[in-house]
Each structure stands twice: as C-alpha cells, then as structure tokens.
Length: 324
Image (cartoon, rainbow, N blue to C red; front, side, top):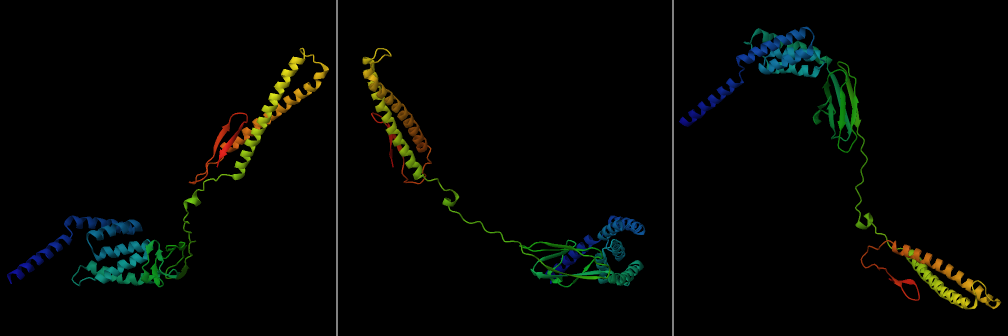
C-alpha cells in the first residue's frame, strides 16, 4: 500500500509540474496582449496580413477563443477561407465553459455565426484520376490525401492550381477559376513518358575491331618489289653492256672521230644506255612504291597472325623477299 501511495504521489507531482510548464508566464501574457492590440489595429485598417501574423503569434503564447476568432477574421480577409473555417471549427470543438469570461462566450457565439456565413462562400474542387489512379495530387501546393481524391475538396475561391504527378508519366498542371460557393470538377489522365531503351551490351569486338591486313595491298607490294627488282637487275645488266661497248669504242675511236665500221657499235652503245637508264628508273620507282605499301600496312593485332619480314637481296639481283 505504501508503494501504491508513493507511486500516486509521484504521478500527481509529475502532472502538476507538466501543468505548471504548460501555463504561460506573465511575460508571455504581456506579449500576447501587446500582439493582440497590434492585431486589432491592423484588422481595423484592413491590413489582414499583419493582423493574421499578430493574432497567430499571440495565440501561440496564450491560447484563447477570442484570439482564434480574430485570427480567423484576418484569414478570411486574405481570402484564405479554408483556414478561416478551420479556426472557427476549432473554437466550436474546444467549446467554452459557462464560467469563462464573457469575452470568451461572445467569441464562441461569433464563431458559430461567422462560420455559418462563411461556409456558403467556400469553393469546392474535385480531382478525378483516370490514369494512373495512384498519382500524387496537390492543390495550391498542398498535398491532397488519397482518401480525398475523387471527392469534393474545399478550396479558396479564386485560381487554385492543380498539379498531378506520377513516376513514369508527364506532369499535369492546370489553374482553375472557381468563384465563392462554386464547384469545379477536373478529370486527369496522365500521359506515359516514352520508355528509354536499355543500353545494348556490347562485346569488346563490337567496341573495337583491329584492322586486318589487306591481301590485295600485300600482293601489290610484292609484285612491285619483284618487278622493281627485275627492272633494277635489267638496268644493271644493260648498264654493264653499255660500259663494255664504251670501252670497245674508246679503243677504236680517236676522240669523237670513229670509223664507219663502228656505227653499229655506236647505235648499240646508245641503245644499251637508254635501256639501262629507263630500267633503273622504273626499278627504283617500283621498289620504292612496294616498300611504302609494305611498311605502311596495318599490323595485325590478333594472336597467331602471320608476320611479315622484309629482307633486301644483295648481289647480282636487287629485290626483297617476304615470309608469311
């Protein structure tokens, strides 16, 4: 029994402390009175923004039905009918004790009258979702609970903005024009966004393909090298014959004077020179072109591909050989 009594005593002490903490102090009351006076002055001047701010602050310090009713009047002046309605409803829900100050009793009566006059002025908006049914709906930036979608929703008269969003769909936004006491219904079916194709997996071969050797190019280079080698060899042979004829003519002629018997040798001498010069020129050009084609050929990057090695042929024949 002693433990029970002790526990009840501690509980009462805690409750008393909580009530004491919740009770506004003198400074809060003084501040609330000053704010209420500023609010009344602003309300008289129809400065509804300042009035709503001052009455809201005062009620946060000292909650009283008189402050809430004046706060609702300021909100009503701002055209925020839905919030004003909730303030009047709050006063009615909380009620006022018969022993309360007369100002509080008058505030309760004013709340009933002004609420009845305000209700017909509320606007109503119904948002009906066709697709998708689980979309998010907002009116003037305020989220509409799923339970309130598809039924009448109280709104301030004027130009409420309805936004509807859903993942994978285009957003919808529309501003309505709703007068006091008017009802508007809006059906919304969002459009699906185009599906983005998933990136196709690519193999390393698709990303990078090494260049393969060109067989035609390779064969052309070897043909040029071989042909150039033959031309160089021909030029060398005819060059030797040219020099041999020159030495023969040198023994038969005296300076530039040659006997008539040497005419055929002179003709052959010039022919050998011309053939040697042309063959050497063609050979050099062919070998040079073949080497350029062969040396600038793209290298094969696959393992096991054939390699190419070029060896110059030195000796009587000039050319190149390759290993495949």
